[in-house]
Length: 55
Image 1 (cartoon, rainbow, N blue to C red):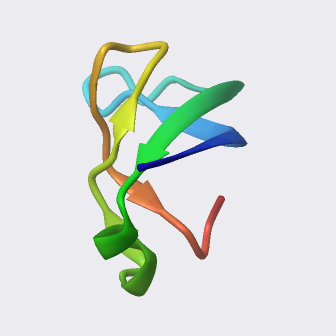
Image 2 (cartoon, rainbow, N blue to C red):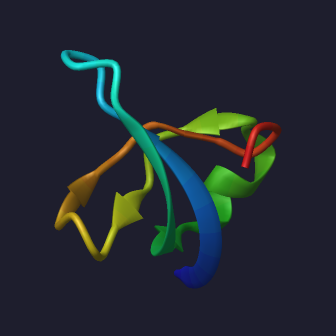
């Protein structure tokens, strides 16, 4: 398990509102080989969709 601090663009689908926020993402070794994944975000307490090419 690895933890990374990233500046992510958080997009809310229903309202179209977005913000940039510094968050901590928990990755596994298996996640390293994918570009689009669903890791655990500590600040939100749930899994989020994460694109490594956009963030």
